[in-house]
Amino acid sequence: MENFDLMISSEEITGKVKEVAAQISADYKNEPIVVVGVLTGAFIFVADLVRELSVPVECVDFVQISSYKGDKSTGNFIFKKDISIDICGKNVLIVEDIVDTGRTLKKLRELLMLRNPKSVKICTAFDKPSRRVNDLVPDYNCFTIPDEFVVGYGLDYDGAYRAFKDVRIVRTDDE
Ligand code: IMP
Image (cartoon, rainbow, N blue to C red; front, top):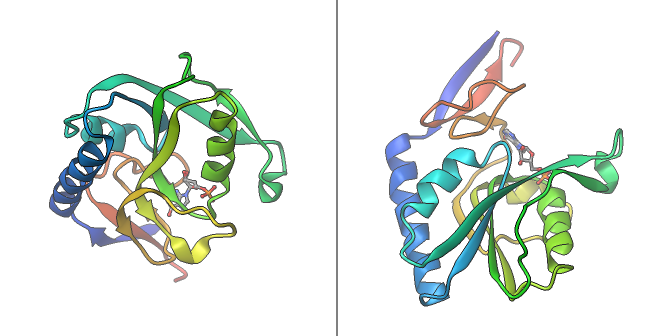
């Protein structure tokens, strides 16, 4: 049986998303961007973020990544779903729910860079830097959080709890 402790309220999230969207809009100085969301967890953050941006959003697309069977530790990934647009010469903003070890985003950025975009930046809703195994630093981050397993705002536990409006720490009965 799981219990949940509130970590970040929906009001705090709403305010921070607006702040980060303003920072992104200022940095791109009206240059169009292509938003690439990472499924499944980023679907809510993408929806909220793009509606707060004042730079032109040329396109919103999604990728889904999976690790080769039993190989997560080596960071060998395949696209379960790739984007369907050509990003050559475009400003790409990868939008992720949470950065944990950093393996997913490091690899995704490398794979997208091979397609000759003008730029690739990373925006995450949540970051757990204490868990990082590489040098990945997101360009934009709404909340730095401690090493806790959290759900809500798109984040799941075995597929569940993505629809919570706030972010909660999962506690199991044995904790
Ligand atoms: P990374 O490659 O280790 O950075 O993995 C990032 C992915 O792990 C995220 O996109 C989530 O799917 C998942 N993840 C990491 N931490 C959490 C968490 O606290 N709650 C839910 N999913 C998480």
